[in-house]
Image (cartoon, rainbow, N blue to C red; front, side, top):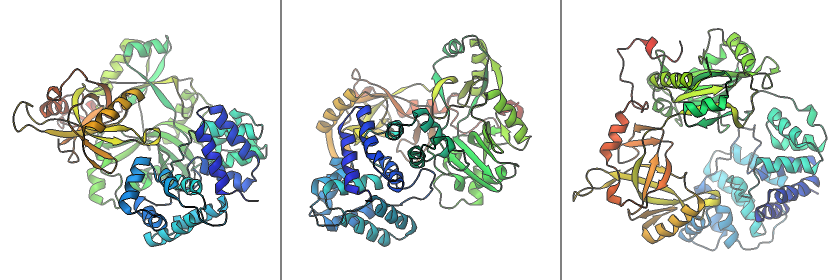
Length: 565
């Protein structure tokens, strides 16, 4: 008998109800064990909050408006009450569960949902999507079915079952080795297909194929050259510049080229010139590297890359004004051979042979001591790059992991004190607390009668759960107005903010935007009028460490500014 949405919803709710990973794992394992291959694929896929397999590039293209228009006629509430309910619930799924009326309907199966998702991805009109959605939800007899369906559509399962739990559940369900499950997912890309291989006891047949993104190997941050040298423990590491761009993974076979980002999304359309250059390199390969804005041997400010992203049409002027290149630093697959288990120095040699002058690659230099690391760091910053990455030449490529094989060293700009002007409800486990804060600085001396706060950014990381709870209670008392999930608050709370770079922007009324802003601490010791002035932001923006500002050295020879020797 095909698996039903109701049974899947009950399993997902049971998983969400426990905080213990082993219990989550066992609940899913028991459920997966009883499914046939077709339903197993869908159950694993939907448990990840995916409408399609990880390597399937289709999307539902269903947003809040389309879903709300489809759902409201089925609910006995008006639009404003529905809107407020979703805001309070933190998601559409749990909001539906509170007002869903039982209806007589045949059991909706996972296979039927998958077929409707296929249709949703093909239909382009909003009216067509509304009709399909309405038909799906009308088949939901119970509240938990409607809630679970919405959770899958909007990628909001919130069961606490991350990828590792699902991998372990698959291994437990079919008595397979967990390491083999993980290795098979690395090779195949789709956990739902791995589950079927595990059911068949055929994990050893998993083979790598191009055009499914793999997780990137990550570097562990170091606070100083001295600490980094201590981690090296007398060993010699490769040192290369840490580039300020988009980490990217290039898959190529024949004339086909695909570029994936850290979020596993395709980004080819934003970089047709980069794709064209990569297509010229002979062979089949998988490269790891960075897309950076680049002209005349120099890396340009990151804002040039941002001007390409999200555009429906890239004009010749946009491409000319915002040139970009892919800079490679690793090769993971080459002409039928997977290289991730080869040491870095061997992969580097293969990379040099592959590109043979047809593609930019990072320069590397050996470093061992704190003095050598410090010198390399200063040179990288002089080239307007973020810092340096240190890599063990004997290391294998470990997807998705931070360890001591790769280390990164970069400095940040000075911190500054800002006043919170708005607080927003978060997502996931923070959906019921005000955890995202918009902040500003004074446009002039706060003592002047016409002084006002101008926003320069928004941050949501850096505080503990207890601090967020404390601020939520305070901001609810200080709330002056509410718009959706956002509450405008009285300017009472001061936060110390850190960021990587500052650039000019028209998005904020302060005229500046922060790159990777994060909260260092709550300044309970400071009054709002003690916060920084916009003039200080402008001074930091103009400072040498802020390489996000436009380059100001057009008279220097390219050799003094190039990334490559």
